[in-house]
Amino acid sequence: MTQTRFALPPVGLWTGALDCVPATRVRELAAELEELGYGALWVPEVAGRDPFVQLALLLSATERLIGATGIANIWARDAVATSCATKALTEAFPERVLIGLGVSHANLVGGLRGHTYDKPLTAMREYLDGIDAAPYTAERPTTPVRYVLAALRPKMLGLAGERTDGAHPYFTTPEHTARARETLGAGPLLCPEQAVLLETDPAKARAIGRVYTTVYLNQPNYVNNIKTLGFAEEDLADGGSDAFVDALVAWGDEDTVLARVQAHLDAGADHVAVQALPTTKRGVPEDQWRALAAPLATLTR
Image 1 (cartoon, helix red, strand yellow):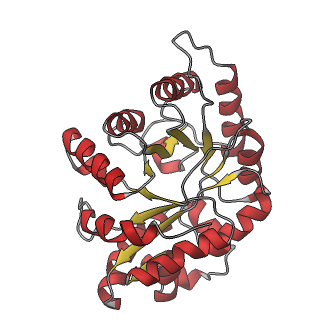
Image 2 (tube, one colour):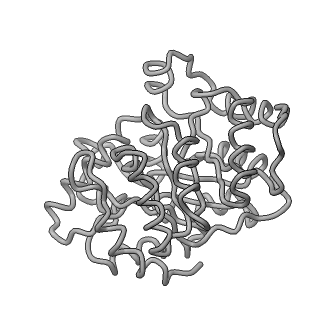
Image 3 (spheres, one colour):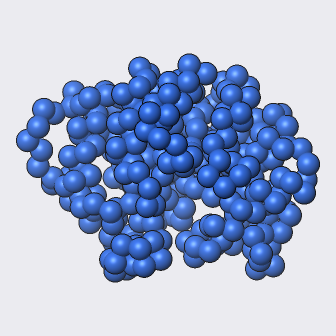
């Protein structure tokens, strides 16, 4: 773990929607989000724009915004490549880069990339060893490089706290945040993602919410973690029961969204990566980002 603690704001945005617009629009949206007051923007990696390229686009269009990966897949590039890219971005944008690393999922590692998905905890530990040992011959950054791990269960959370700046849990609840903080202890960063939706009609909200939950209920890593939070098998069928969707997606008016995000902060989160769910396929939730900016800025740890 680095010597100094990264100064993340209490709330940022998490979105994969930037892959749905041209690069010029990525830069425009990043500048607007910074102007709206958002302090951090998290981007994922599956098979779209390379997340390090995405960070370079949005960081170069802003002055203060922190760019984070949620997450960069450790099977997508070797440890030396990740170390070099992280150092290059950090040198160009000091104290504005946070690289979330994750082991991803068997179907995305084996089926999509052709690698062998085996012993993810060991793979992550060895990957961090590779980062520590990686050479770098370019101009070095003047500030620390920052990493967090996608972590849900105690062993990966423990590794995150021991070897990186902290953890970025995804598809979780405030109850999980409280458990994660207990496992991590007081020092490491804890940055959970929280899905939200400004929609007060229950049927519409849950239908949109199930598009989100269905994706992750097809991944054993998430299902195994969710079961530790008290959900039964019947809660997880067909995109999830109403109670399950309501627990994973904070839908409703602004006050409902704020209450859920604040619940994570009260449970020990340092930063909540808020994911406003698009209402259409490949949609960009710009209206929700604008509507939530001022209210979210009022939240404190």
